[in-house]
Image 1 (spheres, rainbow, N blue to C red):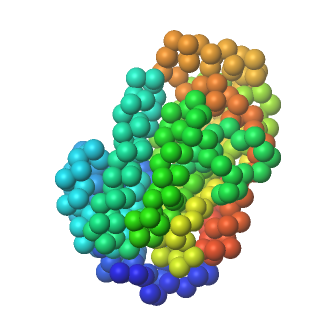
Image 2 (image 1 turned 60 degrees about the vertical axis):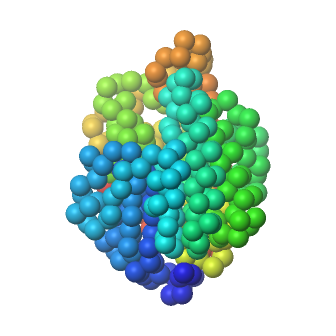
Image 3 (image 1 turned 180 degrees about the horizontal axis):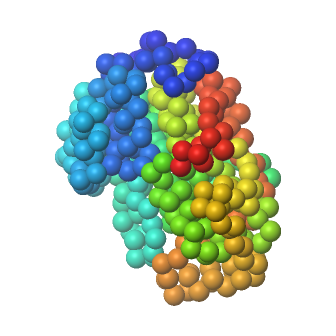
Length: 335
């Protein structure tokens, strides 16, 4: 069932013209940060008929109260997924395995790559209109150019397991969609922050509060924030735009320095974010990678935090009419 009420350029994207009103929409990973925000928006503002999945529904009471049909599901349970995609109009595949140690690599591949392909095949077989896959800027790996666009090849051999599996799945979705006869689209967000974000809000604030060094070098390296509500706008536009099929879109709000990014959290807690010299960060990252320590500073992250690469969202603006509504200061005020 193709959305018919979409207007390509929308001045107020808090409502995406109700293009998904009364349509059946499946959101995988709805118990997570991004999936939960998306499912809530679909149910309460877009008036869609929403089914959400999660491995555990303990944290889903607020979604159920909002009218989301929450269903427990394991992404590796093919029979269960087949039941859930039946009669859906749109599928947002948000669920992912986030890797923190080397021992989880096999599971990351199964969930992020194999399960994504299986879900796409099931969706095509069930007659789903559009399949929107949430990838990540991590799929590019560490860039070798000063500007990265949607046409930049993804790094499917990078050391970072999350980025590598996201790249493999991202490529597979765009390759397989036309072959299966289903409309597919991919979004590649940056550092998703906002109320409820553990990775880029809660943990970052905690680092600053605890006085843990969180800025590498002089802090001039680029951060790539994506405020959660801006990202959800982009997801909805990707689901309904006639220009979106078989395309990938970068959804990154702006390019600011890590010094500026962490400075926002410093103002929240009244502390000045601490920095560490680049050589010190490299030593910590080496220790982490060598001894499999559960610390967030990998060698890839050290290099990432010293990048000055640009990831423009020109394509999303041009084809989708997308514009980030919430700037960094306003977004941080809500985080």
